[in-house]
Length: 136
Image (cartoon, rainbow, N blue to C red):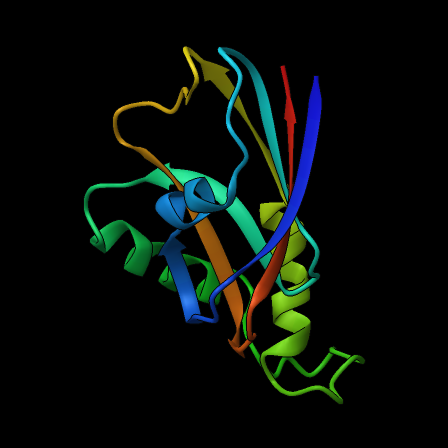
């Protein structure tokens, strides 16, 4: 069985945002055993899995990424879409545009401290489109 659905996450400001519940609300019924693949259809945002308990982790992740990939570097050629655009593309490449999560007993088999993050790398990225594919 393969089910696929597309949906949009609500717009968020730049940063790392826990979106596990919002994603779950948009998924079809999950099989007892399987795999969920989530793919974000953007080049300036990403999906990842990380700490779901302490919000300081999300603040620190934003700081780390901003230090790794800085805005307004003199060697950037792609600059017409704003200071945050080229860095957003680089951060998206570093983070990745898809994640895969096992499904066990009809639920996402995330670790106790794991949650799905939307990594919004633009100052005003807008809603983000997700393709969710359930295999089971």
